[in-house]
Image (cartoon, rainbow, N blue to C red; front, side):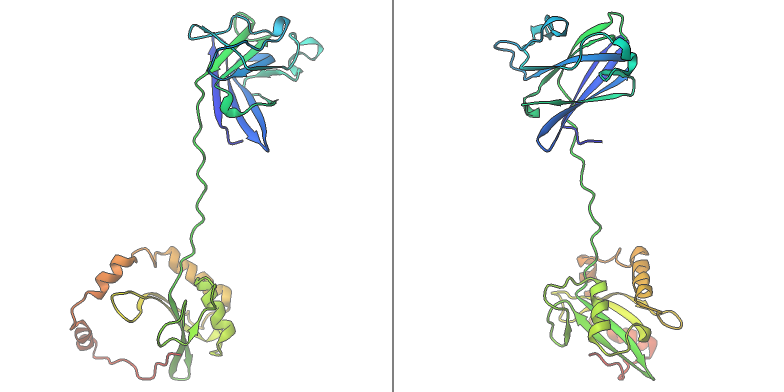
Length: 298
């Protein structure tokens, strides 16, 4: 359906229709759609809401003489003839005959939609008792412009760690979106820090065994509150490892869809960092584990 700019409505006993205006490549078009009954559209009239000056008129049975709006004589700025009255040999197959559910599209020349405040239709062979109308419509509906659907935004990360297993030793590489102290590997300037780009860097710029060697992937965010990155979430490799890049991306998509980022925002990060200074000691006492010395970061 076109993006309509103005929609005029007309209703009388046994007949109703709408006239919807729109523009394509500078050409103003009107969709005349019958919502009840039927009619043979012989001519259309249109103009602004200033009724001063002389009025455009078509001769003979196509005239709109006597048309009024709220008691005032309508002054038409322009008129276009479409067909002669009478269905003739074509009957209801006549090009300008429209019945319920049908739409007649016409072009309006040398006019701006902004200058059309009143729309008139001269029709015969109509389904109302009189058999003809000089329909006048004003106060058009202005449809709201449809909102462009927002493209889902791909999450961006400030740092991603790819951990691999080499014998009994866990090694890995941390890749940052921009130069960071203590981080060697950085995405090229201008490369968007999406997970797919981080994964491509890991595969193409490191020699840690590629996707088959991956054991875990950890996503980090930096904060002004501290001078070290904080983990957001992580992905563990399945038993037997990842088969290929597509399987890694599928695992990432599944984690995002499952809500890996739902509870994360800047405020949550600050809250997480406001734990008491002895938190680290409490965790150490509970687990009895020390940080492994054999974890290497590239």
